[in-house]
Image (cartoon, rainbow, N blue to C red):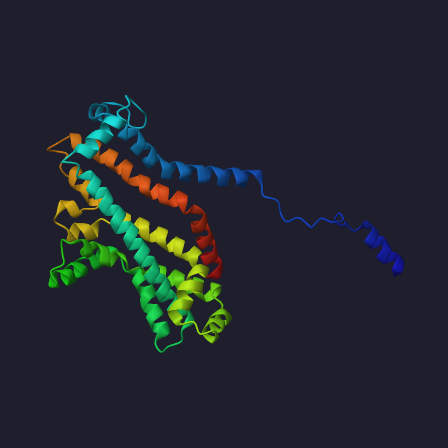
Length: 303
Protein backbone atom coordinates (compact mmCIF):
# COMPACT_ATOMS: atom_id res chain seq x y z
CA UNK A 1 0.00 0.00 0.00
CA UNK A 2 2.83 2.35 0.85
CA UNK A 3 4.60 1.50 -2.39
CA UNK A 4 1.47 2.24 -4.46
CA UNK A 5 0.97 5.52 -2.67
CA UNK A 6 4.57 6.56 -3.19
CA UNK A 7 4.43 5.55 -6.85
CA UNK A 8 1.18 7.51 -7.46
CA UNK A 9 2.57 10.49 -5.64
CA UNK A 10 5.74 10.37 -7.66
CA UNK A 11 3.85 10.52 -10.95
CA UNK A 12 1.24 13.14 -9.86
CA UNK A 13 1.93 16.68 -11.20
CA UNK A 14 2.84 19.20 -8.57
CA UNK A 15 2.63 23.00 -8.88
CA UNK A 16 5.89 24.88 -8.76
CA UNK A 17 6.89 26.13 -5.34
CA UNK A 18 5.52 29.58 -4.55
CA UNK A 19 3.09 29.73 -7.51
CA UNK A 20 -0.70 29.42 -7.42
CA UNK A 21 -2.48 27.10 -9.85
CA UNK A 22 -3.59 28.93 -12.95
CA UNK A 23 -7.18 29.05 -14.19
CA UNK A 24 -8.28 28.46 -17.76
CA UNK A 25 -6.49 30.74 -20.22
CA UNK A 26 -8.53 32.94 -22.53
CA UNK A 27 -8.31 32.07 -26.19
CA UNK A 28 -6.74 34.57 -28.55
CA UNK A 29 -9.91 34.63 -30.66
CA UNK A 30 -12.10 35.71 -27.71
CA UNK A 31 -9.68 38.50 -26.81
CA UNK A 32 -9.62 39.78 -30.40
CA UNK A 33 -13.43 39.61 -30.62
CA UNK A 34 -13.92 41.48 -27.34
CA UNK A 35 -11.37 44.14 -28.30
CA UNK A 36 -12.94 44.60 -31.73
CA UNK A 37 -16.40 44.96 -30.18
CA UNK A 38 -15.14 47.62 -27.76
CA UNK A 39 -13.44 49.50 -30.61
CA UNK A 40 -16.68 49.51 -32.60
CA UNK A 41 -18.62 50.83 -29.59
CA UNK A 42 -15.98 53.52 -28.98
CA UNK A 43 -16.13 54.66 -32.60
CA UNK A 44 -19.92 54.70 -32.46
CA UNK A 45 -19.87 56.88 -29.32
CA UNK A 46 -17.12 59.26 -30.48
CA UNK A 47 -18.20 59.72 -34.10
CA UNK A 48 -20.91 62.34 -33.32
CA UNK A 49 -18.41 64.29 -31.21
CA UNK A 50 -15.85 64.18 -34.01
CA UNK A 51 -18.48 65.31 -36.53
CA UNK A 52 -19.44 68.21 -34.24
CA UNK A 53 -15.82 69.34 -33.91
CA UNK A 54 -15.28 69.12 -37.67
CA UNK A 55 -18.53 70.94 -38.50
CA UNK A 56 -17.84 73.78 -36.05
CA UNK A 57 -14.61 74.61 -37.91
CA UNK A 58 -16.32 75.10 -41.28
CA UNK A 59 -18.08 78.02 -42.91
CA UNK A 60 -21.74 77.80 -43.81
CA UNK A 61 -20.88 77.08 -47.44
CA UNK A 62 -18.33 74.37 -46.58
CA UNK A 63 -20.81 72.79 -44.20
CA UNK A 64 -23.10 72.11 -47.15
CA UNK A 65 -20.60 71.42 -49.93
CA UNK A 66 -17.67 69.58 -48.29
CA UNK A 67 -17.39 66.05 -46.91
CA UNK A 68 -19.07 65.97 -43.51
CA UNK A 69 -16.51 63.88 -41.65
CA UNK A 70 -13.38 65.79 -42.54
CA UNK A 71 -12.01 69.29 -42.20
CA UNK A 72 -12.17 72.06 -44.77
CA UNK A 73 -11.07 75.70 -44.42
CA UNK A 74 -10.65 76.59 -40.74
CA UNK A 75 -13.30 79.09 -39.60
CA UNK A 76 -13.73 78.16 -35.94
CA UNK A 77 -12.66 81.54 -34.53
CA UNK A 78 -14.86 83.39 -37.00
CA UNK A 79 -17.77 81.17 -35.96
CA UNK A 80 -17.09 81.85 -32.29
CA UNK A 81 -17.06 85.61 -32.83
CA UNK A 82 -20.33 85.40 -34.75
CA UNK A 83 -21.81 83.11 -32.09
CA UNK A 84 -21.22 85.52 -29.20
CA UNK A 85 -22.31 88.54 -31.27
CA UNK A 86 -25.60 87.12 -32.59
CA UNK A 87 -28.75 88.85 -31.27
CA UNK A 88 -26.79 91.25 -29.06
CA UNK A 89 -24.77 88.41 -27.54
CA UNK A 90 -27.70 86.37 -26.29
CA UNK A 91 -25.68 83.14 -26.33
CA UNK A 92 -23.56 84.18 -23.33
CA UNK A 93 -26.61 84.67 -21.04
CA UNK A 94 -27.88 81.28 -22.21
CA UNK A 95 -24.57 79.71 -21.25
CA UNK A 96 -24.51 81.48 -17.88
CA UNK A 97 -28.10 80.42 -17.22
CA UNK A 98 -27.16 76.79 -17.84
CA UNK A 99 -24.18 77.10 -15.51
CA UNK A 100 -26.43 78.60 -12.84
CA UNK A 101 -29.22 76.07 -13.27
CA UNK A 102 -26.84 73.09 -13.40
CA UNK A 103 -24.20 74.25 -10.92
CA UNK A 104 -26.45 75.60 -8.19
CA UNK A 105 -29.15 72.99 -8.82
CA UNK A 106 -26.68 70.12 -8.63
CA UNK A 107 -25.06 71.50 -5.47
CA UNK A 108 -28.35 72.02 -3.62
CA UNK A 109 -29.78 68.76 -4.96
CA UNK A 110 -26.71 66.85 -3.81
CA UNK A 111 -26.95 68.26 -0.30
CA UNK A 112 -30.67 67.48 -0.04
CA UNK A 113 -30.11 63.96 -1.40
CA UNK A 114 -27.31 63.36 1.11
CA UNK A 115 -29.46 64.54 4.01
CA UNK A 116 -32.46 62.45 2.94
CA UNK A 117 -30.38 59.33 2.28
CA UNK A 118 -28.56 59.73 5.59
CA UNK A 119 -31.85 60.04 7.47
CA UNK A 120 -33.28 56.94 5.76
CA UNK A 121 -30.14 54.97 6.56
CA UNK A 122 -29.42 56.02 10.14
CA UNK A 123 -32.76 56.83 11.75
CA UNK A 124 -35.50 54.35 12.67
CA UNK A 125 -39.03 55.67 12.27
CA UNK A 126 -42.41 54.38 11.23
CA UNK A 127 -42.95 54.27 7.48
CA UNK A 128 -39.25 54.46 6.64
CA UNK A 129 -39.28 51.55 4.18
CA UNK A 130 -42.48 52.77 2.57
CA UNK A 131 -40.95 56.21 2.10
CA UNK A 132 -37.86 54.65 0.55
CA UNK A 133 -40.07 52.63 -1.79
CA UNK A 134 -41.73 55.86 -2.90
CA UNK A 135 -38.30 57.32 -3.60
CA UNK A 136 -37.39 54.28 -5.69
CA UNK A 137 -40.65 54.68 -7.56
CA UNK A 138 -39.63 58.25 -8.35
CA UNK A 139 -36.53 56.93 -10.11
CA UNK A 140 -38.77 55.11 -12.58
CA UNK A 141 -40.96 58.11 -13.44
CA UNK A 142 -39.74 59.82 -16.66
CA UNK A 143 -39.19 63.56 -16.57
CA UNK A 144 -41.54 64.04 -19.53
CA UNK A 145 -44.45 62.74 -17.44
CA UNK A 146 -43.81 65.41 -14.79
CA UNK A 147 -43.43 68.45 -17.04
CA UNK A 148 -47.14 69.26 -17.41
CA UNK A 149 -48.07 68.70 -13.71
CA UNK A 150 -45.15 70.91 -12.70
CA UNK A 151 -46.28 73.62 -15.08
CA UNK A 152 -49.80 73.54 -13.63
CA UNK A 153 -48.43 73.75 -10.07
CA UNK A 154 -46.19 76.73 -10.84
CA UNK A 155 -49.00 78.39 -12.79
CA UNK A 156 -51.19 78.25 -9.67
CA UNK A 157 -48.68 80.40 -7.79
CA UNK A 158 -47.87 82.57 -10.83
CA UNK A 159 -44.25 81.36 -10.91
CA UNK A 160 -43.93 80.28 -14.53
CA UNK A 161 -41.43 82.11 -16.73
CA UNK A 162 -39.14 82.62 -13.74
CA UNK A 163 -35.78 81.29 -12.66
CA UNK A 164 -37.43 79.26 -9.88
CA UNK A 165 -39.68 77.38 -12.29
CA UNK A 166 -36.60 75.61 -13.68
CA UNK A 167 -34.38 75.64 -10.59
CA UNK A 168 -36.71 74.18 -7.94
CA UNK A 169 -37.71 70.99 -9.83
CA UNK A 170 -34.04 70.43 -10.70
CA UNK A 171 -32.92 70.01 -7.11
CA UNK A 172 -35.02 66.86 -6.60
CA UNK A 173 -33.06 63.64 -7.28
CA UNK A 174 -34.61 60.29 -6.26
CA UNK A 175 -31.54 58.48 -7.58
CA UNK A 176 -29.35 60.68 -5.41
CA UNK A 177 -31.39 59.77 -2.34
CA UNK A 178 -31.08 56.09 -3.21
CA UNK A 179 -27.31 56.26 -3.65
CA UNK A 180 -26.90 58.35 -0.49
CA UNK A 181 -28.80 55.84 1.61
CA UNK A 182 -26.69 52.94 0.36
CA UNK A 183 -23.44 54.79 0.93
CA UNK A 184 -24.43 56.21 4.33
CA UNK A 185 -25.48 52.79 5.59
CA UNK A 186 -22.09 51.30 4.72
CA UNK A 187 -19.65 54.16 5.26
CA UNK A 188 -20.96 55.91 8.40
CA UNK A 189 -20.53 53.62 11.43
CA UNK A 190 -23.27 53.67 14.05
CA UNK A 191 -20.58 53.58 16.75
CA UNK A 192 -19.20 56.89 15.49
CA UNK A 193 -22.62 58.52 15.73
CA UNK A 194 -23.15 57.15 19.23
CA UNK A 195 -19.78 58.50 20.32
CA UNK A 196 -20.64 61.93 18.93
CA UNK A 197 -23.97 61.95 20.78
CA UNK A 198 -22.27 60.95 24.02
CA UNK A 199 -19.85 63.86 23.57
CA UNK A 200 -22.84 66.20 23.31
CA UNK A 201 -22.82 66.87 19.54
CA UNK A 202 -26.22 67.58 18.02
CA UNK A 203 -27.58 65.78 14.98
CA UNK A 204 -26.86 68.61 12.57
CA UNK A 205 -23.33 69.08 13.85
CA UNK A 206 -22.68 65.34 13.62
CA UNK A 207 -23.96 65.24 10.07
CA UNK A 208 -22.07 68.26 8.75
CA UNK A 209 -18.78 67.68 10.57
CA UNK A 210 -18.41 63.89 10.34
CA UNK A 211 -20.99 62.08 8.24
CA UNK A 212 -20.79 64.44 5.30
CA UNK A 213 -17.04 63.92 4.99
CA UNK A 214 -17.42 60.14 5.02
CA UNK A 215 -20.08 60.40 2.29
CA UNK A 216 -18.08 62.75 0.07
CA UNK A 217 -17.27 60.19 -2.70
CA UNK A 218 -20.96 59.44 -3.17
CA UNK A 219 -21.80 63.15 -3.10
CA UNK A 220 -19.38 63.86 -5.95
CA UNK A 221 -21.01 61.12 -8.00
CA UNK A 222 -24.47 62.51 -7.30
CA UNK A 223 -23.30 66.02 -8.18
CA UNK A 224 -21.96 64.89 -11.55
CA UNK A 225 -25.13 63.01 -12.43
CA UNK A 226 -27.28 65.96 -11.40
CA UNK A 227 -25.10 68.44 -13.26
CA UNK A 228 -25.34 66.51 -16.52
CA UNK A 229 -29.09 65.90 -16.16
CA UNK A 230 -29.86 69.56 -15.45
CA UNK A 231 -27.47 70.81 -18.15
CA UNK A 232 -29.17 68.61 -20.77
CA UNK A 233 -32.67 69.40 -19.52
CA UNK A 234 -34.77 70.66 -22.40
CA UNK A 235 -38.44 69.88 -21.89
CA UNK A 236 -38.88 71.62 -18.53
CA UNK A 237 -37.48 75.00 -19.70
CA UNK A 238 -39.47 74.65 -22.92
CA UNK A 239 -42.68 74.30 -20.92
CA UNK A 240 -41.90 76.86 -18.23
CA UNK A 241 -40.12 79.74 -19.97
CA UNK A 242 -41.17 82.38 -22.50
CA UNK A 243 -38.45 84.99 -21.91
CA UNK A 244 -35.44 84.08 -24.06
CA UNK A 245 -33.11 85.77 -21.55
CA UNK A 246 -33.95 82.98 -19.09
CA UNK A 247 -33.31 80.18 -21.58
CA UNK A 248 -30.63 77.59 -20.89
CA UNK A 249 -28.26 76.90 -23.75
CA UNK A 250 -30.13 73.76 -24.84
CA UNK A 251 -33.40 75.60 -25.39
CA UNK A 252 -31.68 78.61 -26.94
CA UNK A 253 -29.89 76.48 -29.54
CA UNK A 254 -33.17 74.71 -30.29
CA UNK A 255 -34.85 78.03 -31.06
CA UNK A 256 -32.00 78.93 -33.42
CA UNK A 257 -32.14 75.57 -35.14
CA UNK A 258 -35.89 75.93 -35.66
CA UNK A 259 -35.27 79.22 -37.52
CA UNK A 260 -32.67 77.87 -39.98
CA UNK A 261 -35.16 77.98 -42.86
CA UNK A 262 -35.41 81.77 -42.43
CA UNK A 263 -31.76 82.41 -41.57
CA UNK A 264 -29.37 79.68 -42.88
CA UNK A 265 -26.42 81.18 -40.97
CA UNK A 266 -28.02 79.96 -37.74
CA UNK A 267 -27.12 76.40 -38.70
CA UNK A 268 -23.38 76.84 -38.30
CA UNK A 269 -23.94 79.00 -35.20
CA UNK A 270 -26.05 76.23 -33.64
CA UNK A 271 -23.30 73.71 -34.29
CA UNK A 272 -20.63 75.99 -32.87
CA UNK A 273 -22.80 76.72 -29.84
CA UNK A 274 -23.31 73.00 -29.31
CA UNK A 275 -19.56 72.48 -29.29
CA UNK A 276 -19.05 75.27 -26.76
CA UNK A 277 -21.83 73.89 -24.57
CA UNK A 278 -20.00 70.57 -24.24
CA UNK A 279 -16.88 72.20 -22.78
CA UNK A 280 -18.23 72.83 -19.21
CA UNK A 281 -19.37 69.20 -18.93
CA UNK A 282 -15.98 67.91 -20.07
CA UNK A 283 -14.15 70.22 -17.64
CA UNK A 284 -16.39 69.14 -14.76
CA UNK A 285 -15.79 65.47 -15.44
CA UNK A 286 -12.04 65.92 -15.75
CA UNK A 287 -11.78 67.90 -12.52
CA UNK A 288 -13.93 65.47 -10.50
CA UNK A 289 -12.93 62.28 -12.31
CA UNK A 290 -10.98 60.74 -9.43
CA UNK A 291 -13.77 61.26 -6.90
CA UNK A 292 -16.41 60.19 -9.41
CA UNK A 293 -14.72 56.83 -10.03
CA UNK A 294 -14.29 56.25 -6.31
CA UNK A 295 -17.96 56.96 -5.68
CA UNK A 296 -19.15 54.66 -8.46
CA UNK A 297 -16.92 51.80 -7.30
CA UNK A 298 -17.97 52.20 -3.68
CA UNK A 299 -21.63 52.35 -4.61
CA UNK A 300 -21.36 49.23 -6.73
CA UNK A 301 -19.64 47.26 -3.94
CA UNK A 302 -21.93 48.48 -1.18
CA UNK A 303 -25.16 47.87 -3.08
